[in-house]
Image 1 (tube, rainbow, N blue to C red):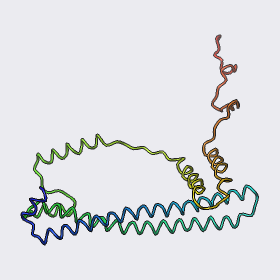
Image 2 (image 1 turned 180 degrees about the vertical axis):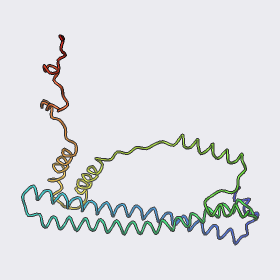
Image 3 (image 1 turned 90 degrees about the horizontal axis):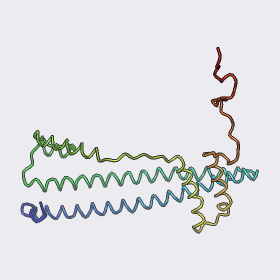
Image 4 (image 1 turned 120 degrees about the vertical axis):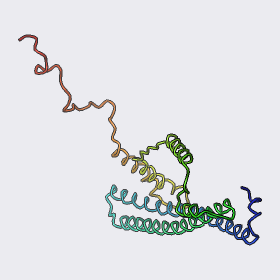
Length: 231
């Protein structure tokens, strides 16, 4: 059903209200998208500061220096990261609820416009409760067939991000060098620190190094494992 056919039974007052509601909903969605970008930028900056402070603690420990000041900086930056995360989550949650409320109103308006002047009670209750109206047997069978087809087409995603955290940590430290922040610690700690952490997490076998005998290895030349030929 097109908007031209809706105008046949919608009054001018109703059409104006619907138009104003649609403009308001679009503005709310645009504001949410912009705020989401702002939150990501702010949290990334807080994470950069926290990662750098943690790496400073490592550097001072390796240089056998008093790391009390570096530890305080790391604790402060970690606390700020937590507080920023809580604040941004609250703000986005409030905006998300507003967007959901307006989106629900939009869905109801679209649904009402398709039902002309008269709406069945079971249809209205089903719409508000997120269900569907009473269906006949052929309609139920068709819906079940569509759901089973969609389930067969749905892919299964597997994620294995055991090493992704170290990659993000390295990126946060190294990307500080591309900004206007002057921090001489970045060049010193970025590669050696992360390399050592990766070696600890994923040990490798050195080429040419003799593999130690496993307790499960069996020496087939041992007399105790040779099969006796004579009885």
